Structure formats: structure tokens, C-alpha cells
Length: 185
Image 1 (cartoon, rainbow, N blue to C red):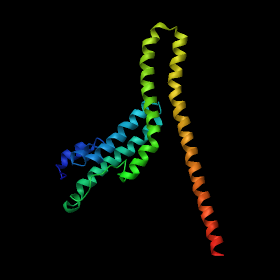
Image 2 (spheres, rainbow, N blue to C red; image 1 turned 180 degrees about the vertical axis):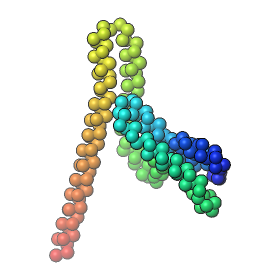
Image 3 (spheres, rainbow, N blue to C red; image 1 turned 90 degrees about the horizontal axis):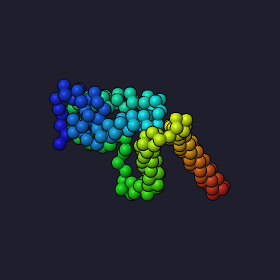
Image 4 (spheres, rainbow, N blue to C red; image 1 turned 90 degrees about the vertical axis):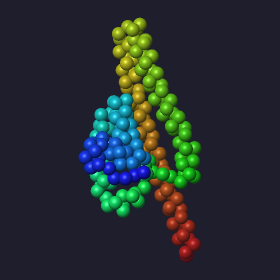
């Protein structure tokens, strides 16, 4: 049951993204904030993209102030607040099934890449003892650069996908307007 908690403990838990929401009983909200925060740290370290960590203060401040806004709401409003995911909204079941079927391949590829990266790093640590230094340095550089090249290419491809989708929308709107103009004359 969601109910207001001790204000000092709420403050203490609010210092950690998602923990304040979870302490007050908003588990979905807290888990989504905590997951976003740690996923961001993981991606920034794994891909060696330190600028990605600039988003962390935004998540932290949002979680902090969201906890205190929830705590300060009047009792009658507080008990009517529904616990929902912040980062991932609840979709209708049909939309969730469409998303699952549409992006299953993308998720599978991402998991294969993550697993391959972990396997590569561990096998490389074992093989490095038997390799000459210049070969091990070359392979280490390759292992460092390849994930960044892949993510960069994926971001560019996603940008082209978004542009293509916008162009299709504009073309469809132009076609509809032309049909409306011909029908109205």
C-alpha cells in the first residue's frame, strides 16, 4: 500500500535516484528511475562515452524533486496517485505486442553484441599472455574501437530511419491534401 512515510527517511532515500519513490511505495516509478540511472552509467563506461554521463544529473534532480513533490502532495491527492513507470509508459496490450514483434530482432542483436563483447574481453585476457606485445596492443585497440564504431554507425542509421519516416509522413500528407483539393473542386 502506498502511504506517506517519515520525512527524514524520505530525504535520505531521495538522495539516491529511485530509492525515495520505492521507499514511499511507488515501485514502478522508482525502478524505472533507478534502471535509467544505472543503465546510463553502464553504457557510458562500456562504450567509453563520458559525455553520456552528462544526462545523469538530470535523472538525479528529477528523482530528487519527484520524491519531494510526492511527499508534499495533500493526503487526498497522494492516495489517488497511480504508480506507473516513468521512463517506459504502459502501452495497451496490442501496442506492446506490436513493439515486441517489431523490435525483437533489434533487442536480440543488442544482446548478442553485449554478450560478444563480454566474451571477447574475457578471451582476450586469457590469450594476451601468449601473444607478442605488438599484436596484443593492436587487438586491444581494435577491441576498444569496434564497439564505438558500431554504436556510431547505429546512431547514424537510426537518424536516417527517422528522416526517412518523416519524409514518408510528409509525402503521405501531401498526397492526402492533393486528393482533398481535387475532391473539393
